[in-house]
Image (cartoon, rainbow, N blue to C red; front, side, top):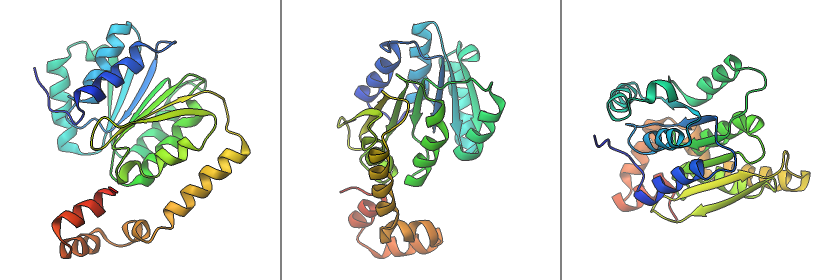
Length: 236
């Protein structure tokens, strides 16, 4: 069965290889943004199955998409019952609740972030999960070259306890990072936080964060279509 997915073949291969070629087989995997299940969700599950180990918790915030994803995964991957726990809701609420439900020594070996378009969300997701990610743990994020990843990619890239690279394999880009030390140096953390602060102070981000969506949408509709799309996606 073919399920709709938002990743191209190279991105799907890179996600699969991150799991199947990991030095330590991932046991706990977290995904934010399953969409219909045919992209990252299905390929993470298949990779865990190939490893013979691991479980995926997948978060989706859109109710109709969530229901369709559940049906798709059940039909395309019958083994999902043993490998997959779907979670409905907004990522910050779901992750906070999920953390309280896990044993105190829980670690998260693999993370894939592909949720909402607000770049603040990926930062919040990273800050919630980073303390649980061990040495060698991996984090990937989609839409790394557009607005969604505009904060997270430069933030992690400035932290010297993460080894990272941007895979320029699609219009939107796939970001990869592996934790190589427990904590960043104070110097790299300051640099990352300063850059994040500057990005958050950008007039466009302030407007997107505090003005009603109807106002932002009205302003974008006044612009030429090509330019408004470029501005809303955050493409250079």
